[in-house]
Length: 238
View 1 (spheres, one colour):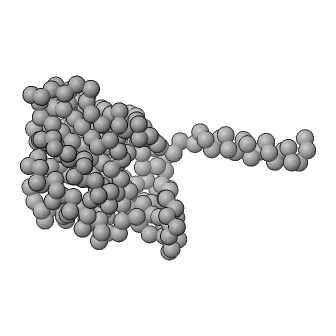
View 2 (view 1 turned 30 degrees about the vertical axis):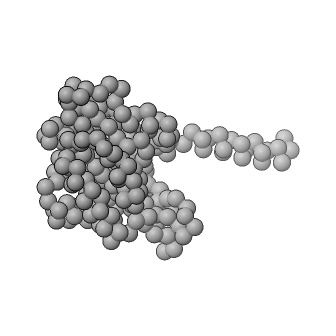
């Protein structure tokens, strides 16, 4: 085999193998839109809204199944991302529907690191890089979002951000503990908001074993277990 041919084969092999590295769920917009609303809506049941990132996307349909015949479960037709997106789009997500319970979270996208050029999941050890949303802005944004949620009259449930495991790209291991502390301060300050201690639950076995290696996302089984926890928190508010 000629050297140039060998190099081509090696590069091609690396490319093919990298395509199969499990980096966690990459939900397309169309996939999220398909699960945003229940197939059938029972007007006699309360309406529940789930707000959150890909962790919540992963448990949306399972929560809906858990609450079948109990509530109509919706989510925004998008990854709700960081609090900056929440501030921009919360009115659109709430719409004009009467909400009975809103279960919400922001965090994993706020605490991830970005480069000055906008590179996603940048190296946290590089001093040029910074969290996408600073702690101070995170607190301010949460206050704004919660102010809008309060006006709906719905029972509100803050869901703690899930753990960040060792080796997760673009994040500091369990930086979510710090951001959860900030969020809890806002929740306590505002008052009247229930708390879903998801971080504690997800840190315990067997849930901890269902998180992907060096990745913030969960296996299908892990997402199903998270769904059961979320559904239980919602039932308490119905």
